[in-house]
Picture 1 (cartoon, rainbow, N blue to C red):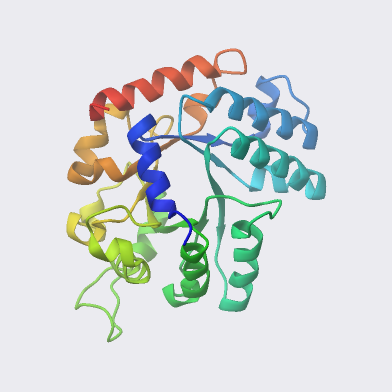
Picture 2: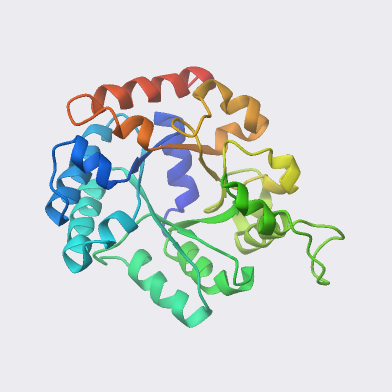
Length: 287
């Protein structure tokens, strides 16, 4: 059996702290970095972020859409960035938010989890809103391959509450469960490590750092053993010193995702910005 993603993530959190560096080559950022609006621009941008993050943070999260907009050349650029991140020893979360029915998801699994695939990543973001069961095969495939996933649960965009806090009515859910809580229960059931609750599983949940997770039914009990990817730190308003206050006993299982707050430093200052932000998180957690 391969080493689990949860084990590798635990080692990364212990060594580097919770900072996850987003690789989001927005058009405005390409301009501010003096890079062209094309595949060469996003390749150079991504490679520079990888170089700056290596040895200072444990995890990077490329946003696939910013590469995808340049078609096949954009995907080739993404493949180069992924390869560089693997060579640098960084864990990679491909932020693609895939979600479909089982046979389609199996193909996504081959693309993102397959050993030697040009798009091979350590974990993939997924959307469960075609029903949590639609993810069963790809989550099982991830675990078997020593890979991971982060399933959207309670996102920081206000419109998400309409769906994520809605109450489920089917017989498999506890009376009054929110959709977000149901998703958390389902992904924990898929991952035997998370079911034990004593160590970190490989299938995680996306929970916005700026939301009140109790409103979504996401208490400590249901999240035990589940890694958490928490966007919303940095430019969206949450600060490193709030990590423990927002996640309490679970804060040691959280990846604090920052993109614009780091990338806006520009190519000459990004390494220093990553070093500073990583140190702030480690100080909060006493790492």
